[in-house]
Length: 266
Image (cartoon, rainbow, N blue to C red; front, side, top):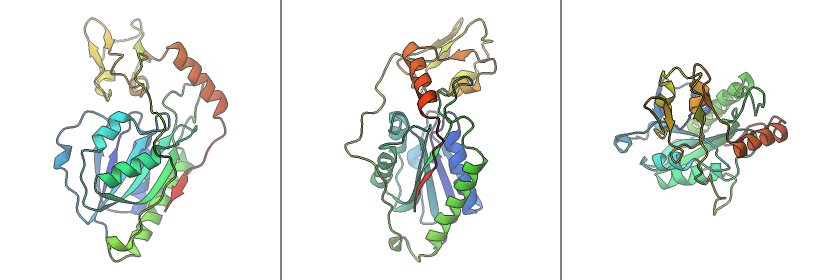
């Protein structure tokens, strides 16, 4: 069977998941590629249609061993029709735990057929210059691996004449899933002496937690600590200085130094 369009569906506040799914799509060497970015609040996703000529690559970050609840809710609005798919999670060099199984179950329940899966490494959203956690990843070697994975996926599909002949993939994980990220009052904040009020941070916030009056205001109840605002701030005015989070960053930097490799299922 032939694939005419690859659709990339991803939630990627710090753009690592986006890089990974783009690499896989590049390796598939399909001309038509469509991006469906779920990072920001979305509208009318139910109207997006999928055909038998489509292949979908789902890309999600891992937050404490799970798919972010916000991303999962946005994913569940899609409806496939036994559409072939690859499921991909990206984690910061600690562990992906139940995230890949959770993503598979969401995809299946939404009418997609996962025939390939992967857990890749991306720089942790908490990573800092002085306390790196998988710093610089995905690197060139990682991207080369995504492209090889994409080629393997296409080879698997082309060997079969129809969808029914392609087996659904099995992935590791436990159900019931482990507890995900519980709501907290922790949030990124702003150094007002450095901030220029350019409002760039608000444009990348997945939950619209950032607003402006005489200064930048962050709604702690909405912040999911994705750190998109920290990565994009041109003056580095956005910061994460909550003591428990700083302790976690230090622990991760000290205990997750050994570079992990991608795990692929095809």
